[in-house]
Length: 423
Picture 1 (cartoon, rainbow, N blue to C red):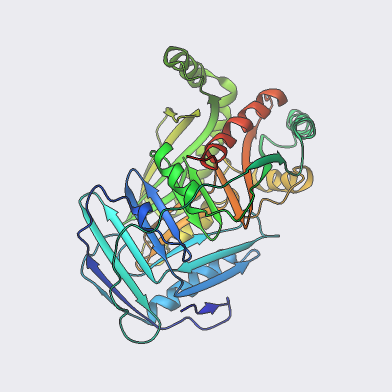
Picture 2 (picture 1 turned 60 degrees about the vertical axis):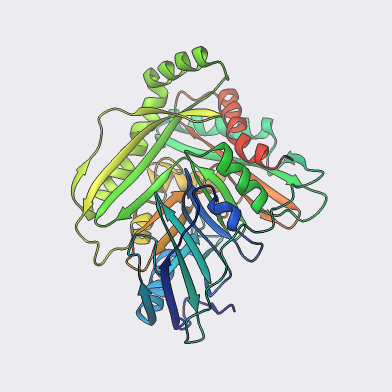
């Protein structure tokens, strides 16, 4: 049963029951997903998945985060919750995907009817009912597996490669003129298949190929992001910042040399510093203490390597500020917008030439206590029927070379492109 709501509508009354689940280690969470409104947040076998829709909120504009947070608080306040497990991610859990910009773009928060979670050797099942009585306990078993897309073809999106390089050159000129320090520019590809695409297929593939990333799906927006915008868990907060990228070659010795080059690159270190600084500045008002490492590490992924920094802190306002509110405070970071933020996002609107929608916006989940994990919707795409729109972005600074940035964008398309291929 679906009970849609609007930012001004009443929050639904609900009954939530969470019980421990005996889930064999060999059973992957992603294999449980049926076709009924699947949602997912997975990494290295752990995470939360769900299906069905007990309630949905759609919001847009500059109040999209606050509208969603208010709706969730009101929903939980009216809920009858019995949680026999008591882990972050148990009890009622909402899954969200938010637009990058204030306009245009619609954001969504989904409360599934069924949620299955796993953390280490513990697993649990949560059922949600809006009838006033507990929902019957469903059988938890692998669903009918998805079929691969057929006849997939790719074409340029809003801009072709030459046009996009021209936009990058324009941005470099403005940075060199002192208008701003950094801007993140994205481009899109469009894939079309012979028939409707089952989003579970690329989600399955991404969990297998990119286990170190957070694989997600919320209402058509899916991907495997390497970047954790914010995790809040029992008063502790973490943000993984990525900025500075180099493509892998597949030759281990060569890639080690490239990683060392990346770690010494003044261009990439400058780009990374902007991103870390923007995250630390946004988190600082909410933290009683913080740890910001002095130097980044190199994160190795199958297709690229990134400079990465994990910023950690102790939250002093967890009783009043949810993980979604922290995500709002952090978005957009310099890793997806630029520096200064307002100037960079204005430039994106002016020259990027496409609507981002929910690309590079926060995506993740939140529980009844406000704990949750919100990544940035990178290495991502949006599926509608037989069409998938893929996204990739690059951080542009004064030393950026348009051809190199185009090559980097091509590398960032690889995860979703490969995930859409047949078995």
